Image (cartoon, rainbow, N blue to C red; front, side):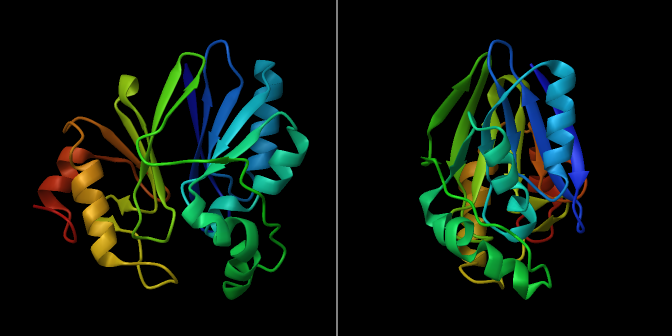
Length: 211
């Protein structure tokens, strides 16, 4: 299994391309520019795309999802159904609020639920429902690699904003403490923006949700 990291789009979204053995690739989040990055990477690897896993439906994380889904016609969009309004209906409205008016919303092919396991070749991914930043926010755990892809739930020494529609600091704190901080200390946290961190570092000293 290989994992590639890209920082893309006007506000620097971290997205991740996973290349399992004996399976199509998996993309976590689809910011602006991810279509070209994924297309080039998969052409070089002679692979197809199996899935796009969306951590949440804010415009900056779903910008290229429709383009990717249309080009890689065997791929599926995975997301929590609570995020449907953002992803399928309000993604363009969300983008318009931030001066980005050309976003195309995309349909969810495969609804995700808390605790669900996804298997792509040798890559086993656990989906965790981690609301707080917005409705339907998800985190994705690869236990074998000790990785937690948390979207905009938790950042290095910070947390995702909760002042946008369906955001809730109480829900965010609960998600962090009950879902992320229950992982072993040495798990690496890969957030939707900014630097990577660890469970131990954030539990110990995060000024918003630290112990």
